[in-house]
Image (spheres, rainbow, N blue to C red):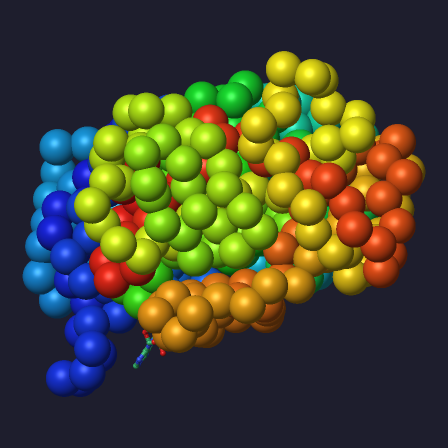
Length: 382
Ligand code: ATP
């Protein structure tokens, strides 16, 4: 096993805008690293440069202490697991796993031992004589991983392995991949556009946008302290709300009223004029259910739509943003391929809430959890 170090990696196709633009990421030995971002952000290109399927325009790609920029894929000793698993339909599970060992002309006895060991780990022993066509999606995935295990690859690389599966199987496979990766302790780089996969699988997550690394952090850190508007909007579902805001003393003025925030947050955002406040849906509460001590950061708003899900209630509250932030939010909507960041607030309330459509409601906001972003740079000031 080995660490993977990407140093100032650039990829240009022709003379256009770089598909990967000066990206540096250290994947520690045994770490599960996620590369995530919307379509076209450069995550697949970056993975293909690690494995050697794409030339590197500039920068250093290191596996352990070897610089691999000029090595062919087979010399890098990495195992790539593709979306379609690349299994041979006419070969048994045993022979599919054994394939790289046969290529290396390993003696039969040794092949047998390695394949059976891998099958044991992957709980495939009873399926060794079957053909891939008779396996479930999950089992096929494990066969593909088995092939990587017997090769004793230095790292696993996954490119959107679950994107063709239905939601239920995707959930199961996600759990399975996480379990195996931890059990094997093998360095893993995993590309996805799905933030749930990113959050649940990654030890750390690298968020990319248009070839640029936006933030590299643990899932919790990304969620709780997003570095900029893009990361804030990309991570979390339903997404963070973005509202025009001004700070006066320790109050933030929002379209609905003012909210008290901690002094240190207020200080960092002081004297900045119009800002964008970011508040996650779950950091609101129905004030009629909230503790008394929470009084003081409550506002009244007319609720447009209510969705009751049993355990929680989503309420949608329309608002209007001034043009200064509308432009920035329109760009963000485009980057995130999402709608209506500018026009409505989504609040997630306790399922016990009796909030009604078309009526005024008292909503409490957790001022400690508000983020304040610079509308020009998108940087999180708090
Ligand atoms: P997706 O999830 O849609 O696959 P991605 O984030 O993996 O997207 P890449 O496939 O890495 O993105 O592409 C990054 C950018 O590089 C895109 O703008 C894409 O159009 C461009 N690109 C990728 N491959 C080539 C190529 N062979 N020639 C020219 N441009 C390319």
